[in-house]
Image (cartoon, rainbow, N blue to C red; front, side, top):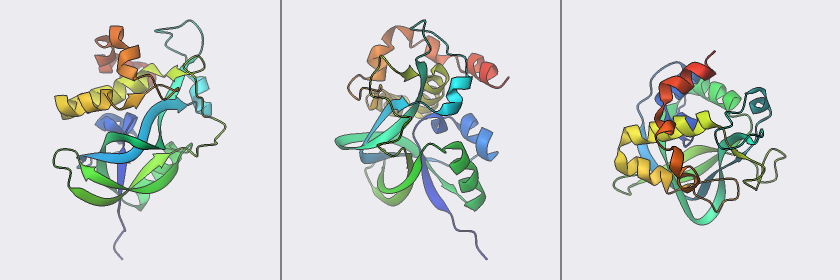
Length: 199
């Protein structure tokens, strides 16, 4: 019996192939895409992120622990990487993305705009207890920004810039790239961050 596969879209740490490989253990063929009608923002505080030591790059408190999320939002869009996942992959990804639910949405080729049909995205329920709506309460986990931006810019400058122009902080108003404008060089230090979080 053939194994049914579905198309998954990564939009945060899954933009980095090494991070995806940490979960499913193999390289996937991916396609740069766009999902319309959703906003990407760092407004999710996973329970297990509290076990991490905050980097305190911008603050001295423990608020730098946010994960990326998406929410329905008219007039917004985000770019991501689509790939096929089989049943075993889905079980692994569902466990990793346990603070989210899989939603089925249309997606489009990043370069041509071609309608690619339905895909699965991981989005948190809008009333979930782990969501925050203020930058005073929550800033992104440094690792998660590094993984996503490095992964995005590996695809190309246009794709990386699209990530920067469609990624917001917890308030849904402040662009991440504006808030972190003085730290963009440090946000390229993938090897350092990988070593720290794989201990």
